Image: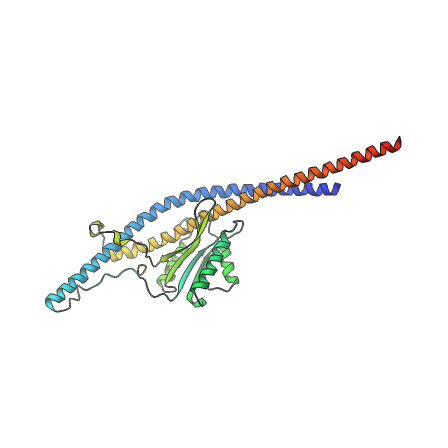
Amino acid sequence: MAESLMDIKRRIASTKKTGQITSAMQMVSGAKLSQIEKNSIAYQQYTNKIREIVTHLATSQLIASARQKSTAKAAEATNGTSQKSLRHDITLSNLLVERPIKKTGYLVITSDRGLVGAYNSSILKAMVEMISENHKSADEYAILAVGGTGADFFKARQMNLSYEYRGVSDVPSFNEVREIIKTAVAMYDSGVFDELYVCYNHHVNSLTSAFRAEKMLPITDLDVSEVTDKDQEYITEPSVDDALDAILPQYAESLIYGALLDSKTAEHSASMTAMKSATDNANNLISDLSIKFNRARQAQITTEITEIVGGAAALE
């Protein structure tokens, strides 16, 4: 019985130390979550503004193109000749133009480490289902993995991993992830794939996250129909084309960086929740072990008292 009591004591002491560690990790994850939430809110303001500018510029381009086509048709009807100079169409940026889909790119964001509950497994499970449903062979897709967990997962299953990046910090800056963003945009621009989806866990609240697969390239979420001719107040120099060529990559980069921030927010939230659960489990185990220890100790004392009483009775 004495050895059993000693074992229980060791288990209680070990569980207390584990609980202290998980409690500290919960506090650290909570601090990181609070910091990255502030960054996400601030960055969202920038994204909204650049989206507004891109929408207006793209609409200006479309309106100008429509006017030129209308003028060219009117000139042809009047003169009976082709007005090539008037029929020059303003070229949309490559990032706005949809092309035939021969290959799809997936930028999959996971964590570099564990202790984040079901954060990684939910992303990877959804990705396997999505790829199996939408593609018949590995030639139809390319995976860009951000995070060691995802990269190792796709490598182990011999899936088409075209790019991997490890070591994203807990609160990433734009300059830090610029390599990821520029690589993804360059691969799309050079025709490695014809569309790009960013796949990650979206942060809903501190207890919930939801898998998202957002189409980032080509850029198709601009509500140009809501902008009228009177709203075009931007003066561009030297031209709308040049302005779009400069600002569209920045907009695409902002979308991808925003998804990375959102994913990291969900990761810290999942880590905080997992560590809280581990701490609660440790406390519950300590409580159960303490009850077990007390019962064993009471049984030992009862046995000792019984032996003493029996010995005293034998002496009478």
